[in-house]
Image 1 (cartoon, rainbow, N blue to C red):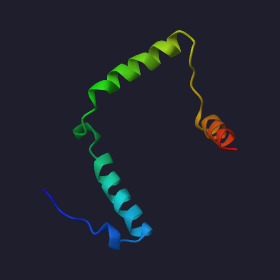
Image 2 (cartoon, helix red, strand yellow):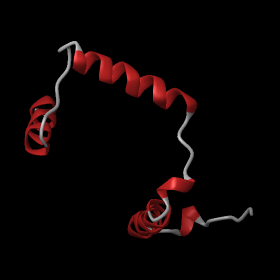
Image 3 (tube, helix red, strand yellow):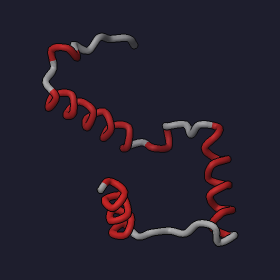
Image 4 (cartoon, helix red, strand yellow):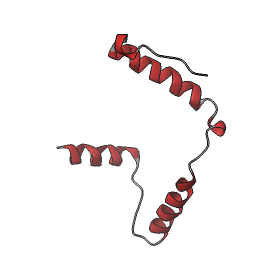
Length: 72
């Protein structure tokens, strides 16, 4: 299916709402979204770094603070 979206006529709010509607639809069936072939390699590399102690997890509060600190 091919269709044209009049982006130049849409407000920022309309564009954001369209993105949210599309994202909600995609998120409702994640099993239908193929994972790119490189994604498994990235996950394995991250798991290896964690098991070697070279990386660790942050909880969401810590992660948000770390991002805010980087943006200062």
